[in-house]
Image 1: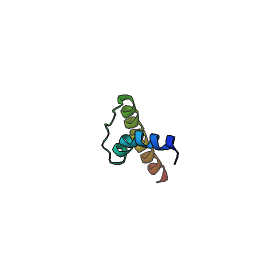
Image 2: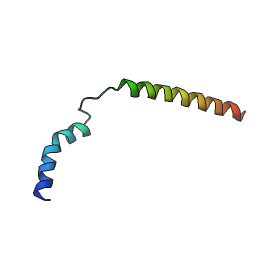
Image 3: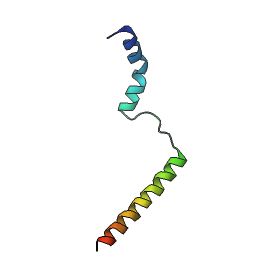
Image 4: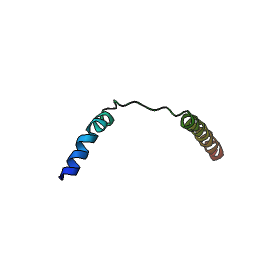
Length: 55
């Protein structure tokens, strides 16, 4: 491993550790949460319509 690669690894170690053990702070994006909720509702409705059309 080169010296530059070693320094990158040492610099990134705290973030890597937090990421692997889910210790980092979780960001909350209101726009994304709302879009995800609407998508889930749309997906459920689409599956319901698909099942009804099979009958």
